[in-house]
Length: 88
Image (cartoon, rainbow, N blue to C red):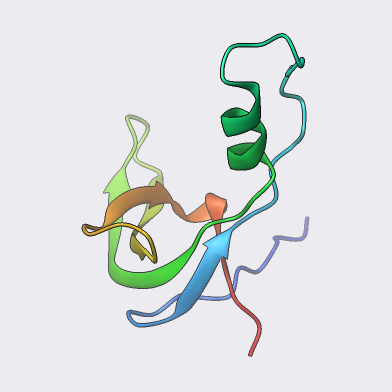
């Protein structure tokens, strides 16, 4: 069995959100159509401010990352799987 190797993140790394799966249902008649379309069609970029490992109920280690997004004033917590390092 092979395991997928994840590039480790470090504090200060430039990151972005991973692509979304695109299974969202959005119709032109949906409320706030333009606003939601803009959110779904763009990625956020930011900087890693802190790394954290939490334990799940079964004892598995889950990696989390605090990211300060470019447009936000405070960092927010995200699962490591949602974040990818921006290529240099």
